[in-house]
Length: 65
Image (cartoon, rainbow, N blue to C red; front, side, top):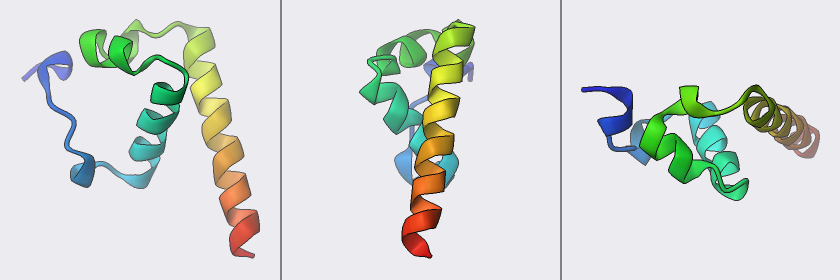
Protein backbone atom coordinates (compact mmCIF):
# COMPACT_ATOMS: atom_id res chain seq x y z
CA UNK A 1 0.00 0.00 0.00
CA UNK A 2 1.39 3.40 -0.87
CA UNK A 3 2.31 5.86 1.86
CA UNK A 4 -0.54 8.24 1.17
CA UNK A 5 -3.19 5.51 1.19
CA UNK A 6 -2.23 4.09 4.59
CA UNK A 7 -4.29 4.83 7.65
CA UNK A 8 -2.44 6.21 10.65
CA UNK A 9 -2.60 3.67 13.47
CA UNK A 10 -1.69 5.74 16.52
CA UNK A 11 -0.87 2.72 18.70
CA UNK A 12 1.67 1.41 16.19
CA UNK A 13 3.62 4.67 15.92
CA UNK A 14 6.88 5.18 17.76
CA UNK A 15 6.99 8.05 20.28
CA UNK A 16 9.02 10.12 17.80
CA UNK A 17 6.48 9.54 15.04
CA UNK A 18 3.60 10.47 17.35
CA UNK A 19 5.36 13.70 18.21
CA UNK A 20 5.99 14.39 14.53
CA UNK A 21 2.30 13.95 13.68
CA UNK A 22 1.23 16.10 16.66
CA UNK A 23 3.49 18.94 15.57
CA UNK A 24 2.37 18.65 11.95
CA UNK A 25 -1.21 18.99 13.16
CA UNK A 26 -0.35 22.04 15.28
CA UNK A 27 1.28 23.69 12.27
CA UNK A 28 -1.72 22.93 10.05
CA UNK A 29 0.25 20.50 7.88
CA UNK A 30 -1.41 17.23 8.83
CA UNK A 31 -3.91 17.23 5.95
CA UNK A 32 -1.10 17.89 3.48
CA UNK A 33 0.84 14.95 4.95
CA UNK A 34 -2.23 12.67 4.89
CA UNK A 35 -3.07 13.56 1.29
CA UNK A 36 0.39 13.70 -0.27
CA UNK A 37 2.81 12.11 2.20
CA UNK A 38 5.78 13.57 4.03
CA UNK A 39 7.65 14.14 0.75
CA UNK A 40 5.16 16.88 -0.16
CA UNK A 41 6.45 19.16 2.61
CA UNK A 42 8.92 21.87 1.78
CA UNK A 43 12.35 21.97 3.38
CA UNK A 44 11.19 24.90 5.51
CA UNK A 45 8.16 22.97 6.80
CA UNK A 46 10.21 19.85 7.48
CA UNK A 47 12.88 21.88 9.29
CA UNK A 48 10.27 23.57 11.42
CA UNK A 49 8.83 20.21 12.48
CA UNK A 50 12.31 18.87 13.25
CA UNK A 51 13.22 21.96 15.27
CA UNK A 52 10.05 21.77 17.32
CA UNK A 53 10.61 18.05 17.94
CA UNK A 54 14.12 18.76 19.22
CA UNK A 55 12.88 21.52 21.52
CA UNK A 56 10.09 19.36 22.95
CA UNK A 57 12.42 16.41 23.57
CA UNK A 58 14.88 18.70 25.36
CA UNK A 59 12.08 20.12 27.52
CA UNK A 60 10.86 16.61 28.41
CA UNK A 61 14.38 15.55 29.42
CA UNK A 62 14.73 18.65 31.63
CA UNK A 63 11.38 18.01 33.29
CA UNK A 64 12.37 14.38 33.98
CA UNK A 65 15.61 15.47 35.68
